[in-house]
Length: 340
Length: 245
Image 1 (cartoon, rainbow over the protein chains, first blue to last red):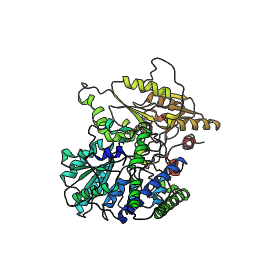
Image 2: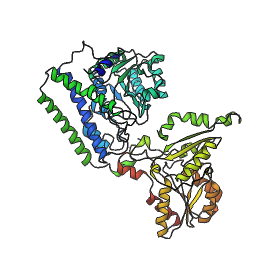
Image 3: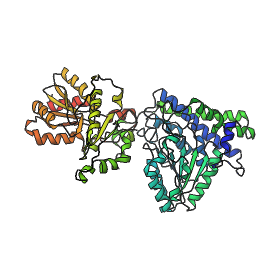
Image 4: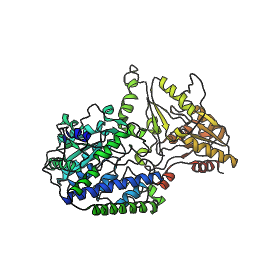
């Protein structure tokens, strides 16, 4: 292990994967497959953006894959997910089809929102994914509301409410925290701390950079988690989900993660050194870690890994093909879905 | 950050900034400029493509400014900063990429509340501001080829409205088309139409016509987005309708 990674590991306040967690072949392969799908999907989306097939804002999730995949593995059927605009990974992890997500990115009728929502605004009620929201922090109140509905209906489900380090400084977050703890709502607030609020580092944008403590004045417990290790995410996620599901109320997970790309496709990311990104890529890449463990544990051979890689590429290429050839929405769709 | 995010703090703007002078009986001034990109950029869909001109222009206690040219942006921004009131300064993201001459003066000021006749004409008045001016001017150029001579006015300030300049023009042309990116209901065009009825009804030869964004949230798909926005063709159509040509 490189020295830098070792030094980071000594920070005792951050939850790592424990020895008690013995992931076997099945979990490691599931995590690998899911994370790789997000990685390859996002790379392809970046390409299509470059080709002008995707317009507007497009926020890629590359580097943060372990967070959403680990959390999803801790859920059960019926649990909901809501997030902001860096949402493609969340949708894929929720089981939404790559074709439908990519076609929404290109604004075609086969997209999850019929091409009307785009990258930032996509939903699948069938897969319990509640968006896809463009206004920073706005989804936090909505996720709290979903958790309220779970409690009201007593359905035993929890709602994962994702937001970033930047959004955690928005006012409605704290109004939501208060209600969530007051009414013991089954909601897990996942703060994806990728170190930058758009182009502003957390040190420059946040008075309290320990985001796990952001619920302290409401008595909401929190935990800092190594968000680059899918096993650590899963373990902490399972604890938090159990807390919320058993009626103990909300839980905050600060996922320490990193995005390799800019805030959006139009961000050249000049506010950080290239070396910083390179270091994360080479020393902390969440997918490489799993791949290494799979090979070291001899769960499958290198050839079989290559086969998985090829399968993923196939899914992603097909989605790009579909999203490129599918038709734009019918002009009459302009006036539908405004009211019911 | 754009004006789309201003709703997160709209209470501070509407309930505090706009009303404090009045509520304090003139004791407490709120001299502040809120400036930022407003309106649709390109393909950024429903939550990032809104024109807030009529939202803020609805509020007594605010001034609302929205320049089209770079020179006006400079002169009006200086005036806004010197103004003792809260000023909403709506810029347009797409216009950031457009080049205009700017006079080299030490202290270049453009007064708030003054519209500008950008292109004189006799047949129809076309009123717009900000990016709407691109559609208005393009339409006027095309209309001239059909011997319909439009007078194009850049409002520049939405609140207070420069009714004197508007009425003077309408008295001359007898017809008026308003152009805005915002939604039609309770829009700036609606207010102008009502005021023209109040102040120049007898001079009108045709009903005032509004060209606006479609009455829907902004769609993402490229084809639908194009349909949702105003353009020169829609302005030309409206001008021909009110001139019956």
